[in-house]
Length: 506
Image (cartoon, rainbow, N blue to C red; front, top):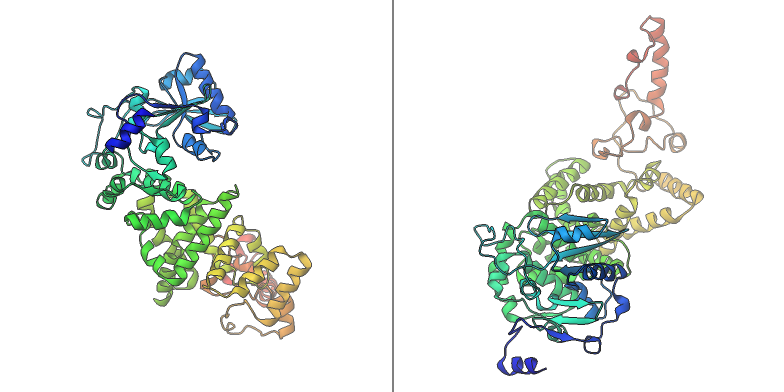
């Protein structure tokens, strides 16, 4: 209490000595039932082996806020090798910072050794970013190395005490985000800290202390020197924080969006763009708050859709067929983003599938709806379609039709497809009939030619799902092949597979 009073009188922020403020259960109010049993197991195992061990970082912050943490990190004075020997399933990972992953079933806990404050001999790049640092130190030094005061507290489950070196408790109560040390130097050491400021401020609804916020706009270009994989990891945490839209708005406010999501400003300034992105992120936030899973591919597909849409329209205006134009647009957008965000191949593949499905939702005749329903990522594509309808990009009738088709039984689905076929809705314009091809009456076409109603134009070819041409073109052409076959056999042309006409020749 005396130290707090002195700090208040002198206007001193953070610690003044190497001694922490020690808070008991009555002072901090942490509910021990919210602490993971595996975290207690790790700390007790290390303590029984003669080491110090504490729950640290975001887990302590969340416990103080009355929120059950999703992850528990442990800090100890044991080296990574010493930690590894104490647990059956433990793995040392990392180059820049060595940490130990301790596994209990599917539960993963990160155990880090206290870091030292000496960075003079640590390898750095030309901008001052620390490339590798495995210097170990004391708990006080470790607290000084952490980024924000609210993340520099240590909780001991055995004694239920919280050790606070930098006034983090006070900042939590004041809802203030404050960096430890000199902001410019800390951002230069690790520019990702600027993204973390934004994420924590938006997620916790905290204000950023002015000295902490001041250098961000000037130093934002330093993020370009960070490996793309680290930037992507931080962006993913930001988007899956449960406050994704607030995070993006904070990014723009602090000038950090340039280079991370190019053209984001342009998208958010368009009425349809801002509505679409807002709906997508709101839906994501609701799922996260409800404890449901979220697809990173769906998230990034939503954020970048209007860039794809703009380029898709441009390629079509230049004379390209719709489906190839869509793939060209997707390639261009993904290539530009991969350089900055290191989008993983799996996520990029999911994004392509979601985008490529959108034109297929317009083809509701014949077997098309049934085939699309069997797509592995149908649900993601369908949810994406509903967002497009809700934002006003396309007619809501299309989304309503697919909702009824998706939820209906086989009889209802058959009736819906039949109604589309007889009414002509959903079928695209077909090419004129080939020279010499017989025309069937309307009734025969509706009954036997439902597959033929599928587009025979180049713009309906889909890279992964278009039916084989021989399958789509049953009817008159196939009959001509059967008539010609016997005549060729009678002439001695042979009936083996090598002489059979290919589907491309139909």
